[in-house]
Image (cartoon, rainbow, N blue to C red; front, side, top):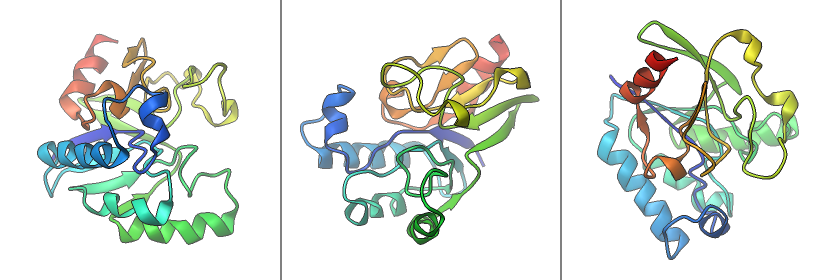
Length: 190
């Protein structure tokens, strides 16, 4: 079993191609490339933490991409997920079933990981930084005072590594989940 991390797949979100300068001519091409890259590196027994913003666009038309992805899959919700804490409880519960039917277990919006003896935070949001001007969702971001680095998404193409923040978003990781060895090598530098 190997651990992988990813974020911001945005399945079905045509505008993300333009907004994040993704190299695809059509949303279908983007969706298929992400599925292909994921399944090329992730095996059936591997574990993947998806750190939010999995599906956008028309949800019912695009959630099935999640079911095509290999591995035991956990979703740490991001601001565009239908199970995000800022959604109404009834809506979150209704959509939770869709994620679960497609092989994802929805976990807390901030959780923790350990690799090579290093503890770190898993969250959609970094300590600071955003894909827009100004930091949104400040009350949902992890605090640096916990003494652990953060593995995150949300900032798209802004950076891959920014000190004690590692962006596992697809935009800076060749549209492929990040292997635990890459995260451990980064943790060893801190």
